[in-house]
Image 1 (spheres, rainbow, N blue to C red):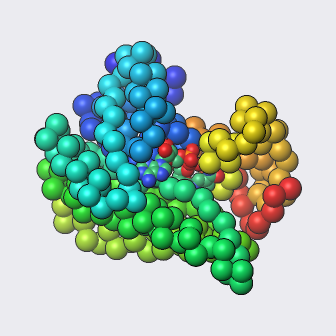
Image 2 (image 1 turned 90 degrees about the horizontal axis):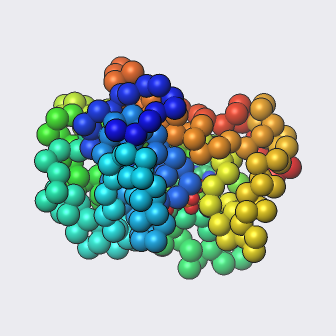
Length: 265
Ligand SMILES: NC(=O)c1ccc[n+]([C@@H]2O[C@H](COP(=O)([O-])OP(=O)(O)OC[C@H]3O[C@@H](n4cnc5c(N)ncnc54)[C@H](O)[C@@H]3O)[C@@H](O)[C@H]2O)c1
């Protein structure tokens, strides 16, 4: 097992699947779960980044597997769940995390081409993969975390699709918690504030410079006045996934530096 700088070892011999585990918050979750003893399955459509994440985990003594999936494609989701079922006899952790961010104002209608892919990847795909992994999750009991967002509690101009999906996931989380409790499965959501990930710097002309600028940015929309590192979100998520959270289900935990409004400055 790899060295664990956090000291806690809560996932020995557990199998954990993270959608979108190749990048950003998902990668931080994969690293943390792996450091705490889990075999992590990176389910992602970006093969290059996923292989890189798997290689880095293996290089420090962790266990990781890449499963290719396009959450926008039902057949791909079902095939990925089948591949996981053929390789593993139980699944103890599921993190529904992969999403995309697209913008457009309601009035100008420019959002229309963005609506279906964003919904398919970030909502439909999450429920579909959960449905198809449920037999594995039921085997030995499990914990699920769904990534909502502070955006789902704000409703921002030009981002209605993303924000509505994130609000919807709070409700889906409660439905899953009710439906799966009899199988020994807890389901919670985490609503991060503004986190420094590829979602916000990956498309920049100079990603490294943009990452640094975000890390140094002062914001007025939260008490702590700064953005978070993905590892700070992963810490809260791994708590919810662990037995330390054995009496917590159906909840949404806000990991947002004390967010109270929206601003970009
Ligand atoms: N970064 C933030 O500020 C922030 C804030 C609140 C919530 N969130 C949420 O956290 C989650 C992770 O965000 P992030 O910032 O780490 O994003 P990211 O862009 O860094 O990572 C997203 C991952 O999802 C994968 N992905 C995208 N489309 C996919 C598809 N069709 N099929 C399979 N995988 C796909 C990407 O390859 C990537 O690995 C998302 O649900 C996001 O909405 C992020």
